[in-house]
Length: 384
Ligand code: NZQ
Ligand code: ZN
Image 1: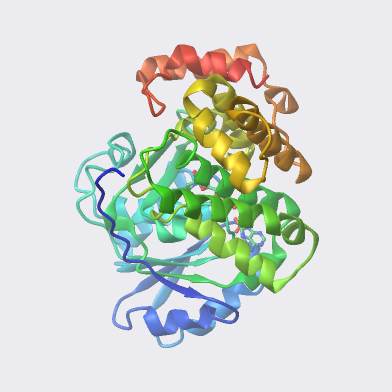
Image 2: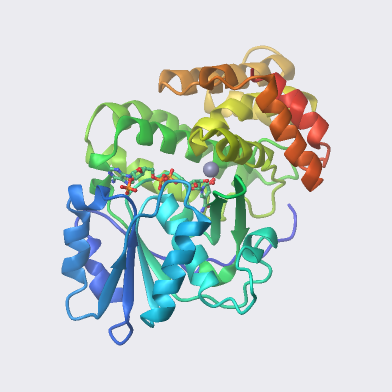
């Protein structure tokens, strides 16, 4: 097991009817801004529940944060925050709203001229941020219990991530009943995003982390077990299980002391930036390609997953690992998630665009640092 530090200060308030508890945890003496997206929270009653919890607190609001939140929109919020002397941010929505609020919190305190530096530096320039908290309405990203944020920039078609301990939420309220209004497509996306988060921390090579391996396998097995119920009915227990599994998939526990490989996410972000495919859709395309391309390096862990998650006990390591890839693709298809670039009309010309971007950036990815622009092209050709 590799050496590690673990720090996660997020208070999770989980369960039915917990939203008005924002009242208990928000500071009473600071001006709060509630930030949200395109209006789903107004239609499903979440907005009203939050407002109930804001009684006695001075507050204002900012709406219109889009999926794959835009830098341009975030900077409008920063202007308002400065003008209105807001001191605490409350995100209400899915991962996009949470991520936007994390960036806004950091940008509002950033002394440099260009807050985009926060993203190009990966977050190392962040020395302070406004305090923030959230009410989560979409299980998927894990943003509610981590310090990462992903922001897109319209003008340059970029999508970059940053992380900083300054943007951990102070608390996150997770009420599974908020998920009842989610369209099937978003539920499917959430299942796939959480699944792939586990894989990026698992499907590499072993450094003797039996507990973390079992934890990762437990999270993916749980996602597979609840997927059908999550998609077919409004059932509290399966939604609660899904919501907590998605949080546990990316709250830092699974990655402690292990070898990670986030190349599927990094390549996927470019597919979203250039072609507008949803985040999870991009992952479902790229993950099988990365696994096929890196098969020799990943086959030990993939075979372990086949044995433990799908109980494939026959055959040798190679055939078990191949089965893990097939089972993963079957899972995606079973929840109506496409897995090919051609499903979105993306062709060789599109692959070239992505390859050129990786060339310009000089990015090196993979647990063996062997995925560069050329290999990105090879991987994406396996996904056509
Ligand atoms: O904007 P509103 O009206 O709220 O509608 C949203 C949006 O259209 C809707 N929605 C959310 N909760 C709902 C609901 N509709 C009905 N009922 C509800 N309860 O769903 C749509 C998608 O929301 P979004 O927040 O974009 O989805 P998600 O949570 O999947 O977030 C995706 C973003 O997170 C980033 C992705 O790159 C993408 O930008 N990620 C963030 C990570 C992190 N912070 O750690 C890690 C992930 O890998 C990911 O990259
Ligand atoms: Zn993701």
